[in-house]
Image (cartoon, rainbow, N blue to C red):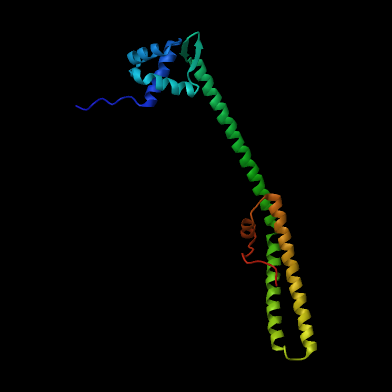
Length: 205
């Protein structure tokens, strides 16, 4: 025949609270050790430990009167504790809702900026075109390196003009990114992903 399993800590705590709520009276430790064992099956050896845990959690009240220490717990306090927990949870829930609303509004504002996506796409396309043009000019420059100095000078100027134009567009894009980052606290990677800006996007050197 298997040995009867003892009560768990939670079962002991629950039974001791039932005892207090049923009796609605004040008790000393010695009385609780005797009565809880007799009426609730809690061994007297564990009563002090369970009682201490309930006092630490603020579920059972205690006070010293003269040389005696008394313990008690009334159902009304348990009801108040439950109400207080419900109020705390309700406040936390409202805080979460407020944060969610703020995030939703920030996302909505960020999406407004996406209306300019086509414009940014055009800018990036023109920038890519300028890069290609610069590459072609650089190739031509290489071909004419030993040719007419006037032709070389012209190509150099055209290359410089193309590079400056490309960097102006690059600067404009960086300014827009900075504004979005400061306004909505988005990371660079998020902005790049949203507007299709490549990872190696930078000024033309």
